[in-house]
Image 1 (cartoon, rainbow, N blue to C red):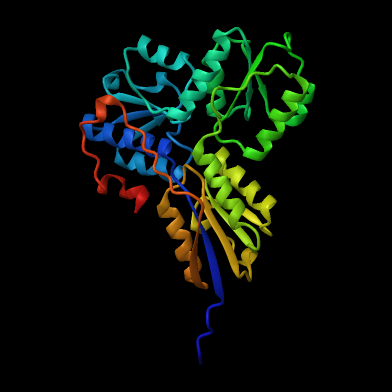
Image 2 (cartoon, helix red, strand yellow; image 1 turned 90 degrees about the horizontal axis):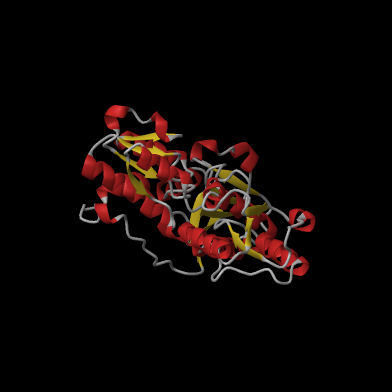
Length: 333
């Protein structure tokens, strides 16, 4: 008997993909805090939206909590880390009232949006936040300002229905992980209805979100299937699935691990697109490539638009601690 040849498959691997500088920094902060202060290091909410990352940090000694009151009294000298998505002002105030030592891992680009919103408010404008209700970043941004100072707009329909008290005195900001195209449509409708709407000083959607969407657009045409590695609660990952479909992929799915792949549903394909959301580690991308290589004669082509060189410094308290390749091997391979 002869072994049947594997069917050929071209994998269009997108670049850039996976971790952005803000996510990388947040994970480094937890790892360095564990090296510097020992376990446990507490983390309020998921440090980033990825279960694999969370479990990897738990294995190193991180303890994830929903609220600060879950931290035992005997561990209050241990650090607590705030997630990359940012937190309302009430959270560090709560930490201070409990005499907790906290390390803020908020992405600097999210902090920039906070400052943009506060500037609008300081100049007397009502803030319009374009984003997804309930997302931690949206909760954090709205929590920078007094209650009633921010209105959340999710869709063009919301923009049509919006009835502000002072239509001539509005300023907008956006969540950093939105669809560039969808957001442009919402902003255009708001500007059409409110000509005096003031834009932020710089684009709120972050470079990493934009870059990952652009390369998926380039790679999607002609793909039988496009896989995005990411978590179902990751906004930027879900947007990539939508972008791939709009750009011409016949099908697009969100996958957390290779074990989730339904091979019967995947069927006979000849061209696969592959990218990863900003919270998804490279080890899972490699895991999925190997899963396809086990079943196909796979050839990987790099679809790259730009090379990212951004690097965000960790908190001052941690900069003297050495971070080694081995420290980050659980996510980087």
